Length: 345
Image 1 (cartoon, rainbow, N blue to C red):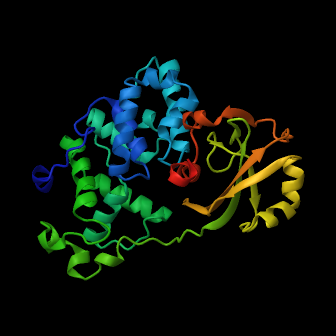
Image 2: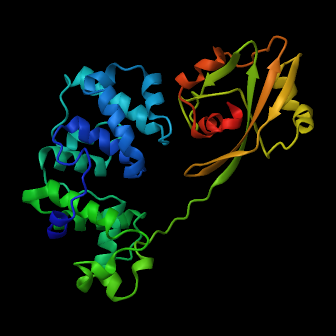
């Protein structure tokens, strides 16, 4: 708390007591760095100043505003919970930790953050920063991604919280982990707690916190077809339970490996049966564009195709749009990156 008093990190949601804005900031900051999330928070607050405004917004509009942040289930849950609060709770935010947990997309960390920051209730937050500070200071080698570890750290964090100043304490330990006790190059030499820090005293800074699971990523190869005809192209919304649900994309052919040449594509049986295109000309084959997800790596290639005949639509969800209107739709980052490349404008 002494450190926090001298090292306050100014952020727009700090000291905020409106649970809606706190909830918004916490959902945005799940799996997102502050620097990246800050402009999104400001845009959402400006566009939707109340939970009712967010609830009444079209889903496509919400997804478009979220575009680029990733982990889009957060945006879907945000919108769902906003409608629940507006429609079923009369626009009033839950005021207890237990009731907050019932909101879709709100877990123990987020519920504790809202409860402490909005209502100063004594619930300890345990995020990545807190795990790191506690594991290093106390020398805890239990894996933070294990069931036992989560219980151990949650119990310890709750024991340590300053119940009379829960909001300040939670913010202090999170800020300390985010700016001082950082994953790499922590400021141990000027740390006010180094004399009692187990990891520093025992040379284990790089070893803690400990994780037992290593995420294995699988490669997926996407071929996106951008059919151009009189200034129009075709897109569809991803509705299946897969990555990027409710985002838009171009007609997609997923293959077991990357297709390197136009000849290779034209020989592909799926291309022949999938498109049903009689009159088309491939005008451009892009370089591979990559996007790393938690469990997957997407390698996407874009094929610009000029249509002179009718496209046989085997997917009824595909719709025609003017190419100039594409910026109005929310696309996955890999597609957005393709269009931001000046060569592809």
